Amino acid sequence: MLGKSKSNNVETEARVKVSTILGDGAVFDGDLKAPEAIRIDGTINGNCTCEKEVVIGKNGHLKGNISAQNVVISGRVEGDINAMGKLELLSTGKLVGNISARSLVIDEDAFFDGRCTMTATQDSAKKSIGTQSQTETAGSSETQKK
Image 1 (cartoon, rainbow, N blue to C red):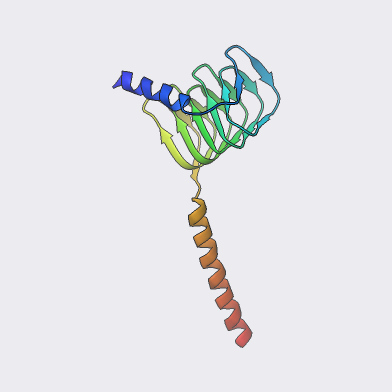
Image 2 (cartoon, rainbow, N blue to C red; image 1 turned 180 degrees about the vertical axis):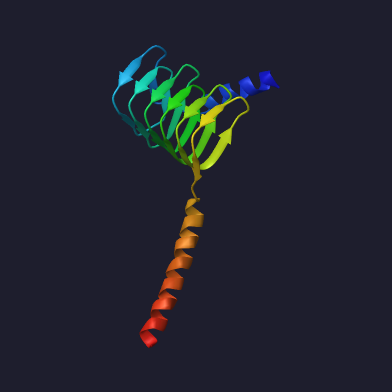
């Protein structure tokens, strides 16, 4: 089982097409923004914002907040994460901070210390907003009739 879990970690990290890489041993101080996927194998002291995926490699370390479509963590993150899609905390991953995500996967042996808020899918949000608007409209009509 252990060997299988490690293999899955490599597969999960490898399936993302990365356009920005911070290599092992590199240190970046400041906020990082990118339109495409980011892989971090070094250290970032600052926030990370990405329109696609953020992958924190096994040796990666981020002290700051992450905002991205999907996030995969094999290394260490100290900060809050806002994932519009899926957040995966792999077996070697450590996260100290709060999570806001639509989908969450935490492998056995991963470490998570914080709070998690699950967000609704876009379709569910649209349905609830539509239902709320219809209810409000109906209520307004009854008020006007009186």
